[in-house]
Amino acid sequence: MNKLERTVGQEGDQRADQPDNKLAGIPERGPKDAQKDEPKYEPKYEPKNEPEEEQTKDELAAPPPENDPGHQPDRDLTHVPAILELMPEEAEIGTGLALRDRSGRLLFFVAGSRHRMEEGERFFAGIGGHLEPGESLTECAEREAREEIGAEVELRHAERTFRVSSAGVVSEIAVSDRPAPYVWYEMIHPPGSPREGRRYQIVIYRAILAGPLSELKEDEVCGVIAMTDQQVAEASGRKPTLRELIGEGAGLVAALPGLEPETRLFPIGTAAALSFIFQAVGSDERMLS
Image 1 (tube, helix red, strand yellow):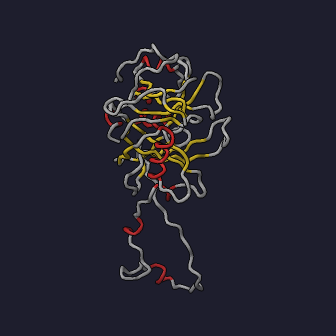
Image 2: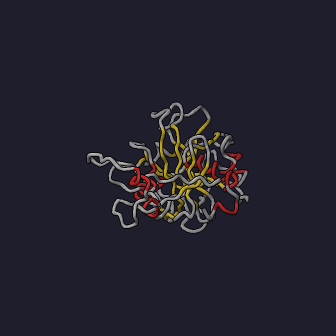
Image 3: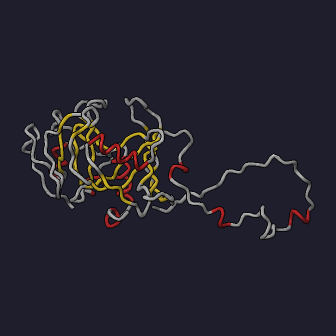
């Protein structure tokens, strides 16, 4: 890891003093300001290894008695699944963070050198990564924050959980997890990536930055940017420059050499999922979800 060239404050807005690089002099202003489709849980049917017995017409027509041990009342079929129970078998799973600083802006990492991109472009995404064997989703989310930006985070329970398809279709689901995740997003790895075309299930948690950023994982992260909800809502389909985003109210929290003011930024992963959701829900609901 590479030590930050910016010092991040302990309290209030996590933005740092301008680093001594080409980003100096960029003006920074304060922030600007589903259809419900809950999948039904259908338990798998496993036939018993017993010989079938012929039933009479009267037996077939009669409803099972309430005290019949084979009778399953409706309430037994209303199980609310945990988020992992909804995942496809052998799915590639990871976590992401809808991470806010103390001023309420959302924090995203800007891709580092290990990621292949077009000249003059970099993507931004939520802090997060792959789920390791034996690790819970919340443990994964907290570990990735420490590894990528050297910071502790506080996970928050989401009152609503959204499902975002790879095509950007937003719906709402019920899960039993506590804390409940904010989003389940199915991302397709982009062209040029090592897993190009494969599906990646990202479980996204709401979180608050609990401490200062201490260091960045240099090969993965070249900077951290704080964005307003409005900027995130408008992110899909745009490639603004870093200079333009800062002029609109974003803040550069941390940066390593090589992140230029004219670099064009676009969202993937958690950032893309949040953009789709923010377009689907009203602005008053975003902080509460």
